[in-house]
Length: 263
Image (cartoon, rainbow, N blue to C red):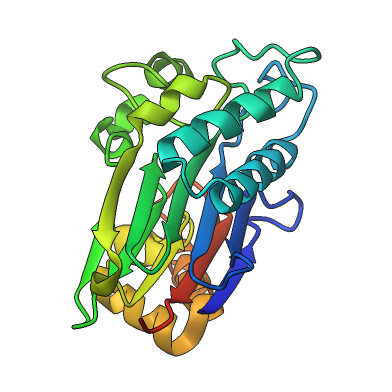
């Protein structure tokens, strides 16, 4: 497997709340990609004594270990177990029932010589490229269905967070794993894959610089770091023009690209 990873914080004054890993099993017959985008709560208002990076590191570590060691376990069960393991690590010190308890979006991809499994929860993106170059985006679009005016209200957003009719993230309830978008693709139909947090997918979704196939081309030719550089240039130019297209100048941005070994 050939892979590349890049991540940039949204601000030098705040820690990066994204988390990413790409791993190969000892047998070398497959691999795993894990990508998380931590949800930033209002300062001091999430019922938890820990930081979002603390949460994403523990959830991401559990997902990476389980997806590699339990090849017999479906990704939804792996996510459920990883959420429970992470919750157990701080349920004695924190209010895990708080609607803004630390949480994250999730992308999982795992492959072997037979198939490529995927799981997506919330607004990070998984891209799958076929041998003929076609690119398929795997999306959980529930957050996109929430009107912008609702998302501008913290109270209104909280009423939809991890609720039926709203949107879902990985927080403290293992049952949310059943809400994820999951699927399996024959290994012969996937040549390469990529995962992006919403800070990186802005290149397509916010600035409209190209479609997902164009984005994949940038990742292949310039690597994840090249895509993130392009996003930062666009954000800066948009800010100078008034910055009307997003509510903060920069977001944490992470991208991972992996070319699967030939069969």
